[in-house]
Amino acid sequence: MLRSVLVVNPKGGAGKTTLAVNLAAGLAYAGEGVCLWDLDRQHSALQWLARRPDHLPPIARLDQRDQAPREASWLVLDSPAALHGKRLQEMLKQAHKVLVPIQPSLFDIAASGAFLRELREDQALSRRKAIGVIGMRVDPRTRAATQLANFLREHDVPLVGWLRDTQLYPNAAFQGESIFDLPPYLAEREVAMWEPILAWVRNG
Ligand SMILES: Nc1ncnc2c1ncn2[C@@H]1O[C@H](COP(=O)(O)OP(=O)(O)OP(=O)(O)O)[C@@H](O)[C@H]1O
Ligand SMILES: [Mg+2]
Image (cartoon, rainbow, N blue to C red; front, side, top):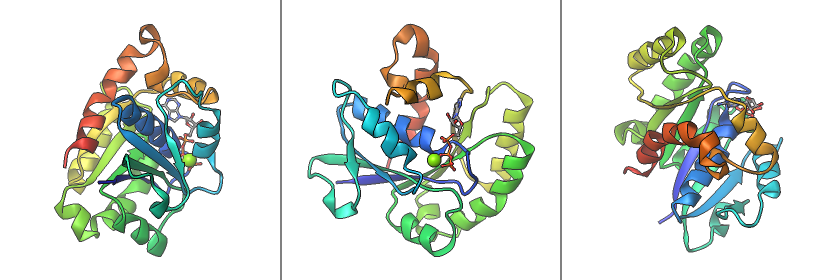
């Protein structure tokens, strides 16, 4: 069965594409068939995919849902900024899991409240507890991280994991690489941060 993970946050630059391409790669490393669908007209995820070297675990490009290869287990969807309303609802209907990257700044947190409420109006997703947040570009030990955790508790949305602020992400992306493609001496700590994220995505 093809399971889809929608990466979404209407705020521009929240970290959607970074999260989506690394998630796709993390799943591909487990030997699972992964497709990546770039819904954004900026095509950042597709640019990354086009640069991806052939020797790395493959990720298939998808442009239409019914084109997914039979052996594919995962579809990761990278969404554009400002995705709201009807189009968002359509995307949510197709998603098994929804991941929302949020940077723990006052402005990002404030901008996310209404969106999380909009997401939670999707009864099916809420019932399945299929909506999760990733704290983006943050050290989990900081005050900013605590602020984000408190905010999410109020909204009753789980904080699935954290990704730290590191140049490893943009540097890897230039090569069409993910954090999982880097040598362990560089990326071991970052890869460990992905364990709870991959577990949450796979669970259910
Ligand atoms: N964990 C991280 N550490 C360092 N830099 C990061 C991290 N996550 C994202 N970035 C950088 O932040 C910028 C915005 O990230 P990204 O493009 O993934 O956001 P986006 O939500 O997809 O943006 P858009 O709304 O324009 O599609 C990029 O330059 C990216 O390299
Ligand atoms: Mg993007």
